[in-house]
Amino acid sequence: MQIDFTKKLLGWNRDQNKRFMPWKGESDPYRIWLSEIILQQTRVEQGTAYYKRFITGFPTIADLAKASEKEIFKYWEGLGYYNRCRNLIATARIIASAYNGSFPSSYAEILALPGIGPYTAAAIASFAFGLPHAVVDGNVERVLARYFGISTTAGSAAGKKLYAELAASLLEKKDPANYNQAIMDFGATICKPQNPLCTGCVLSKKCQAFQKGWTDRLPLKQALVPRKTRWFYYFIVKAGKNKLWIRERTGNDIWQNLYEFVLWESGQFIPREKLDQTRFFMDTFGKQGFHIQHISPVHHQKLTHQTITGCFVHLDKPLTELAGYQPVLLKRLREFPFPKLITGYIENFEDP
Image (cartoon, rainbow, N blue to C red; front, top):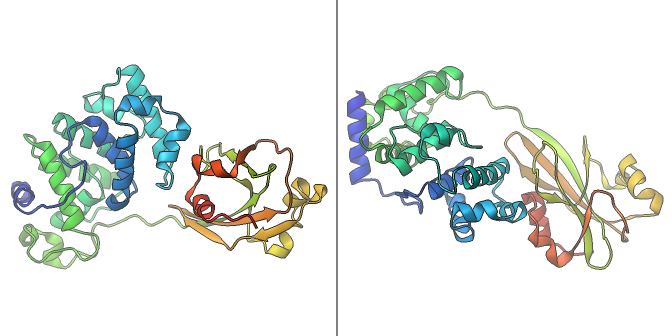
């Protein structure tokens, strides 16, 4: 059954797989790594534009390693999951200093780099260096779970071990890159999460899920973590003529290394008529005679386990000093990397 699976999958890849991606068939480990990091938690359609942008801006890993964090985060702006960008920077600098700018060629060394797990290490090792390591991502798990009728929950410790061992046993060791690309493309285009193309599928005759009507049940997933809501109130505070106060986010929280306006986070929604009565407002602005000039409509940004609800609050006059913040000209705002919630507001920014 396993030999038949691999043989038919490779035949499908040779004769029917028409999926195109700009990094497909790439052997440069830098470009492979870059594409894989971008595609973590990102759809191919969205990731393609960012991949092309990075390749143009940073043609080599040496170019990426010597660039400033601010510049790299600006290139990443809007892609989300910013810890990926921090790991991208860290890995580029490690390779530049410890490996003289050349990507390490062993699986163990690749796996030891920041932000690289077993899947990404296997992809780089097989695509760039022809090493026999099987990739296991969501697409692969779905194909294997359905074909072999696996009832072990994907993502559990037992599930990770089972899928890793099964994937390794199916790998075409003489051509691991071709096999890994085939199974990922098959999961993305044929054995899709919703409405899989089972009719005419080259694997359907021995696919346990198709034969037993389990297609919509597999793979079994772990329960989702409940999503929480946070309320962010951004105060648009002038710092003189055509200038606003902003700061870089620090600490171990969302959007670290991105920039923001003066922020107050509340535990709940605060209506406009009570906002200037809060302790934050009174302590920060009230004693200096500031008043709210305008409040934007509510904006939302959904993250993996939380939803950020934000309002932009314009004050009526400049503030000469603000500890922890820096004054920036309005025309230079777009030079700084901001979270998507803020960039959307900046694009349509009008000073009331």
